[in-house]
Amino acid sequence: MKNFILALSLASICGLFTTTTIASEATEQFKLMKTLRGAWKLAPASVQEGKATKSKAAAPLVGTNKIAMNFKVIGKGTTVQENLLPGTKKEMATMYHCDNSKDCQSVQAKHYCAKKNQPELVAEDISKDNELVMNCDMSTGLCNSKAGHVHKIKHNLISKNHLKTTYTIFKDGKFKKNSIYHFERIN
Image (cartoon, rainbow, N blue to C red):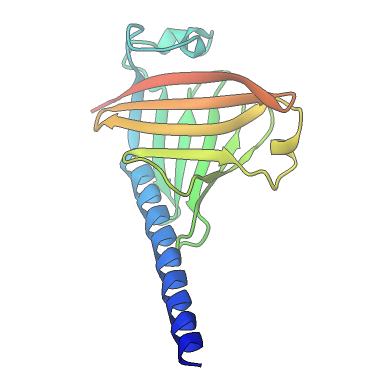
């Protein structure tokens, strides 16, 4: 009986520790999103990777002081609103929030895409420092469909003033491409 009570106590402590660890990880992830607050411009072409910044919407913004990404904390600090390529035909928004503002167990997001769909995403449980990885919520229809959609968003804060964001696109149920953008904070 003593062994059973000891095992039950240990299981309870481990469960509490795991829940607390997940909650603190999610809280830290959401805090990271809040540090992105403000306006960002696209870094010069020499810093960019791939073809995303060569598109008709992004190319005119590369290396200029025009806002290419903006983060705004709204809803009394409960939501971070991301606007990508504001004022262009390819403008998109993503809304990030905790699943529960009082006890954050996971960071969730909904991406309002120029592809005319809205994938729902959830943060990876374990992220590297200064990095947030949002994966498509596989319990939703769009994430399991053949429709082209953003399947992953990865924000990597390389330094206080340098952000690398990757949007992973899936089509026909598989990887199609990564759209990578390097941003510099506008002071």
